[in-house]
Length: 570
Image 1 (tube, rainbow, N blue to C red):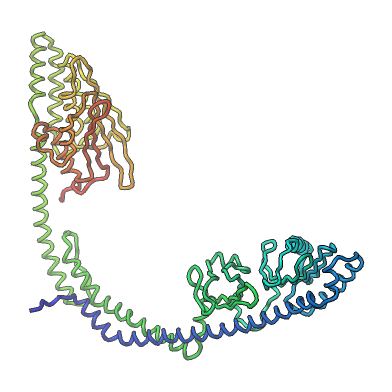
Image 2: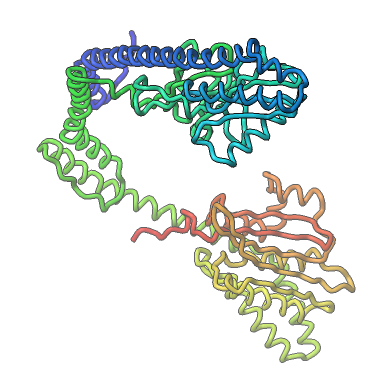
């Protein structure tokens, strides 16, 4: 028998709501999508027609200018005169007659910006510009044209060329070869359509390889691609915010492209289409609005009620519900939570007592070798009748014992731990012929930072026990610094001695996952590790290394309190 899958009340309500509204939403979305597609197709077709008309008008004007310059280069007597070397007077008269024709042409062809006639063999360079060019602009163009025609290149079959002069592109038709050239320049600013495009449509000229010839700053800023397939429209721009429609101009490397902001497509809704669009949007908005009403009146109170059930804190209060049944259920669960919280507190207190007992057990696991050595030292002092030394040592031992039996959950400041370690060193110095030396380097801001008692003393005691060498002073260095990182601040404690270091198998056991053998022989270090784990969890770290100086133990303790350090419930 197939097992039924349980679903939430909220899911069932949403499913029923969607079952009713989904067909309506689908039809409305289909209508909106179809309307957008239809209007977009009509809008693109309209602009494609405008591009074609504009391209035809531009191509017609270019062909007219091209025909004029071609007839001049092929049939004009004065041009033929300049093509051969002649006397200066004849060259001057011939160029003057050509300039007269150019003046008539520049007034007849609106797109023409300048005409040129250059004859290198007769040292004749004449040109005529339309009125809007400054003297500096004319001189720049003249220098460029003279340099261009000195290359003896045949430009006749190359059609209209787009050339850059002083950072601005213009169209050029250059006819001639050898040392004589006739040319015409068309400025893109002269090609102005009359009533063919909308005001927000941008006209851009580019090469067939995608290089923009006009509006270059806008095209670069918006990352507009001019290399698209001009046989159909395409969307381009950083945010696909332009519709590109274009056509290539014949006999040239020039593309004419209309860039239409995408908002222009949506502005084509008129009349009844706009009304239907607004009604469709309102109908779509009614669905989430209905869900919001249902969410506020039924679903949210139910979710709040279910959330209150999962809360275990005693301070949770009854919620405000508009539906009486929800309020009654909430009151019943509040009473139940109170009882559960009381039982949880009792269990938590038992766990705290268990941890206290475990820490106390760990703290009491102390090897008696230190105290046996102290008794031997006291006996020797008594034999030598050094009673003042005996008194001093007994006081030091009493301080040592009092500190060792502190409450294991009461952390101590670093300055107290330092005093205890130095007291231990004084005891050793009174009982050994070659007393050890312990130096401390502590960040002053960390002197009041609290750590578990005996955290440092255990490692100092191990150094005295295992790193001592005959006739050599044992030097122990304790360094405590602040570590700052992205995941919090830590206190770094290192204890370094000048002994022979750890044996390889002991070092592997200390830093490995299995430490049972070492724990049986070195209870103090194991106790420190276990207490760090109980108090700080995985945030604390204990590691051991061998350095050129000797053995080194490193303790890293987080400054921020861990969950195990939170206060007990009152």
